[in-house]
Length: 152
Image (cartoon, rainbow, N blue to C red; front, top):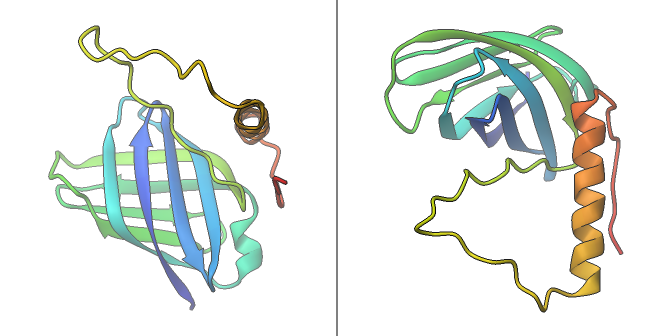
């Protein structure tokens, strides 16, 4: 079975991850139950049978143990690795989508001590790119797999 290195992060009721599959990035964005998880693994291993398993919808169950994460996906894919910080062991589950488009978790809410204003000189190109990224996020969240996305 082929393997690929990567990382995952749980926050805001989501798990997002990125893996280097034969030199190409593959991303995952799934809903997580229980929804109050906040953890990450900087060094996880994705195990799969073929790349076709890494596109489209997915369902998984797993364990966020004291020191490790183990996720088993319907269809034979798995993710395992060490947590960056120890925690109590908990069973986790979820559903979502694999894609070639990266999904980035929103930053945590800013406290009043470190609130910054947006850059008023942000270029039109950057604004258009932000709109495209938000559109792709909405498609992923609604369960529509995205095969590829390119920005000029």
